[in-house]
Length: 225
Image (tube, rainbow, N blue to C red; front, side, top):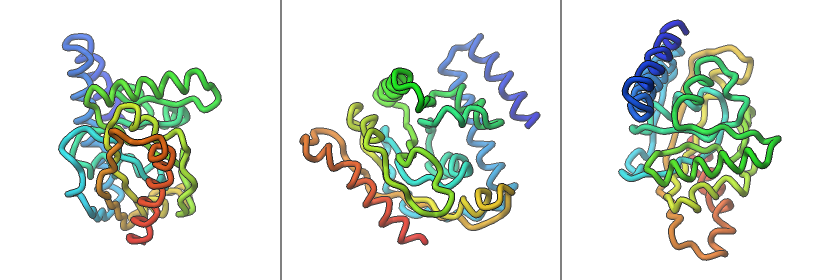
């Protein structure tokens, strides 16, 4: 915690002296080191499947959400910088909340439609400028291992920015924390599927996109369970 806080001071200094972009790059490096440290400390055994499906260009990663530990697992396995579309409550979580707020990530206030729409537009703009994002379309953690229905509006960030979606499924992180709110070691599997193109979709294809995404994630989840 102290190490991360000191890195926060350094990030602030870099932003003031070298600009926001350099501060973001530094923050991403700290985020990655913290993610790897968390995984190592908890002795989480991570199995990655389908990494070859991650394209070289900008993309939006979308999949199920079991635990707060999904965040370090995804950051450590995607092999690139990522930011998150996160619910506002996440900003109150120590360490994670600070870095979510001080990178390119955006927070959603689900009780304020206007602010929520503003955050979505900010994410669309940043993705269009080449920043990769992670979105959990369930809207919250499932905790019990089930995959809840996906919010229909969750895919709009990808469709409006015309950015491909990389579906993923994750399993095992809930047992490492959410089951009894105590951190423990465990085996985690994460699988990445083939990208779903969002460019030049017909109106019907756009309407059915969230169902297609859900089906992809559900099938992959069944594969790793």
